[in-house]
Image 1: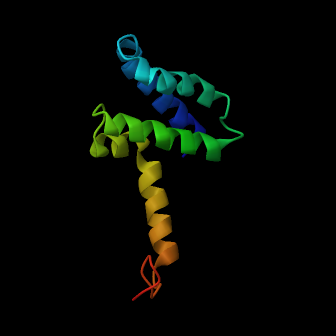
Image 2: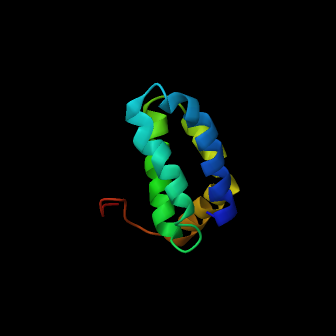
Length: 100
């Protein structure tokens, strides 16, 4: 994901979560991660992506975002990366567990 896109997502999630955190101390950790992610961009994008994945997993688990919404949040970058992954594994004759 490009740094600019990551910053857009951070802004959007902060706006969505700000009112919720006041009423839910369990979401406090998530809201505190978002501004800290800005310090990771652009030099530590791999770590920022892991943090984003964690945050998005929580948002999905608690019902604040659906999978289609998360895919849309990630934008075309996710679709491009998925296509690259599929292309690089095309022709592999074993499944995920090493079988046919």
